[in-house]
Image (cartoon, rainbow, N blue to C red):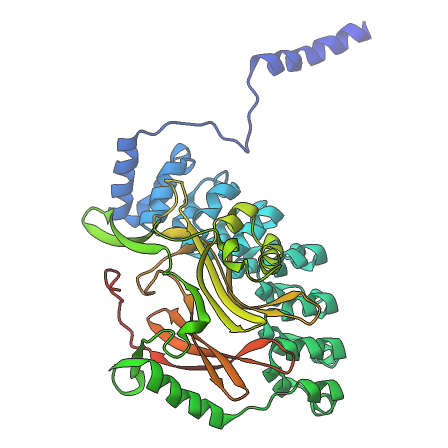
Length: 462
C-alpha cells in the first residue's frame, strides 16, 4: 500500500514532465518581427527617445532591431536589450568599438567570461574598469591581458601590481608603467634595468641612491635641450610646406617624405584603403573606409635578403593574432637604417562581414617596428606602434580613418643617427624622433612640429 501511495504522489510530476515543454530562462522563445515593424519601431524611437523603454519582451530580444538602434541612434541603447543579448559575447563585441563604456551593461556572466574579455581588450583596454575584479587578481589571466595590451597592468589588483614578473613583462613595451610601480619595488635592479631599457627617461623617476648605481650610470642618457632646438628647426626647414593656423595653434603641413635618404627606402606603397560615401540615415551622408586591392602583398618575400627576420616577425605576432591575420598583412614601408638595422611597417584591414556591425568599423592589424640584428645572429624588434586584431570605429577627423605611423626619413650626421616618423593623429600630424640608446635599442625622444589646427579633414582629398 505504501508503494502505491508513493506512485500516486509522483504520478502528476511524471505526467507534467512529458506533457508540458521545459522552459529555458537563458534562451527566451524566439519571436518574429517583420522588417516593416522594425522600421516603424526605429522611427518611433528616433522621434521619441524615451519610447525605447516601452519595448516588449519580444522586441527586447530581437538582434536586428537592437543592432539598428545601437548603430543608428545610441550605443548605450544596448542597456535596454534583453539579458540574453547582453550575455551573448558575439553580439556584444560588435558594438564595443562605438563606445567602450557600454561594457557596464554587459551581463554579470559576460563580465567574467575570460575569452570575451580578451577579445574586448583588443577593442579598448578601458573595458577592464567594468569586469569582475576577481579576474584582475588572477596572475595567469593577467599575463594574457598584458600580452594583448601592456596597459592592462594599470587595472590589475594591488597584489598583482607588485608582481615582479608582470612588471617586467609590462615594462618591456610600455615605459609609462614605471611611475605607477610601488616605490619599494622601483629599487629592484632587474626592474630598474628594464625600465631604463624601455625608456632612458625613466632615470628621472629614480631616487637619489638608485641614480648612483653602476647599472644606472651605464644606461643613463642625458636630456639635451639643444638637440630639441636643433631638430625643431631641422624638421621645419626640411619637411614643412604651408603654415596653417593662428597664434598658439599655428603649425605646418608635413611634406617631402624620404627627402634626404630616398635610397634607404627599399620598399614603399600607400596604405591599402580609400574613403567611400554611404547613406547613414535618409539623406545623411557619412564616410567609411574600404579596401583598395591594387597593392602588393606577400610581405614575407620583402624580407628575403634578411634571413630569419620574417620568422622573428611571425613568432612575435603569433602570440598576439591568429595565422590568417598574419597572412593578410601587407608591406607598407621598409627602410634600411644600416647593415644590421631595418625599420618597417606592415598593415591590413579586414572587412567585417556582418550586417549588424556599423559600416564605419573595420578590423585592423598593424605593426611598425625597428629590427636590429644582434651579434648572436638573432633579430630583436623594437615596437614603435602596433594594433593587434582590433575593431576600430573610423572617423574623418583622422586623415586615413585612425591614428597612423609613417617612416618619414632618416637623419645621419657623423655618429648621430635618428629615424623620423610622421604620425597622423586626430585633427593633427606631427613628428616623433627615434634615436638609439646605450642599450642598443631605439626609443622615441622627441615629439615636434606639425599641424594642429582643429578642422575636419576632407576624406576626398589626398
